[in-house]
Length: 190
Image: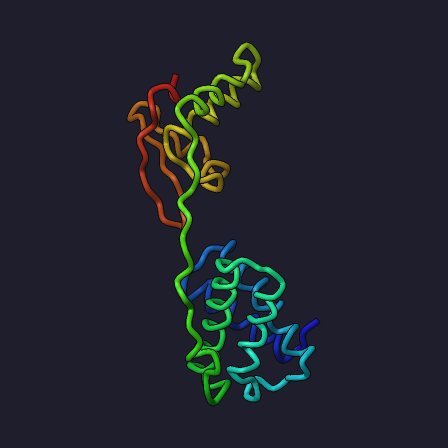
């Protein structure tokens, strides 16, 4: 559990991310989770004053993560969260010096997503029993998902008012609350 003072700094930073940086709720939750773990580590190490935190201590945290077998992409995300937090604290003059400033966020190897073959997609689209109402619904969901190239979060947030059948498009609210218009594949309409 983190102290009230550290929690206050954390909550202020999260509000900044949401209101000033316009990050999505899910992104803010990820920052919260990452930073809560880091701040708990700091307190376990008996550091309660942010001005006494050193680059060496932050590096120790990430060495422990590496020793625990946490993936390099997850570690890079955590480091980005920690660096952003200390940069904010420094810019607000809550700390005299940013101890995370010189830490390197090495680019992690990006893996290409695995994609389904046309045969696998066809098999998936044939799965719902279209003789039943739920099967029709499921088929429509899968067709929209596939033909529009939607993210799962975009799909589950669609509303009837976002569908424009006569124009064969849908309005999608994507990452960062950005709206876009996407054409609907004909098989998803009929």
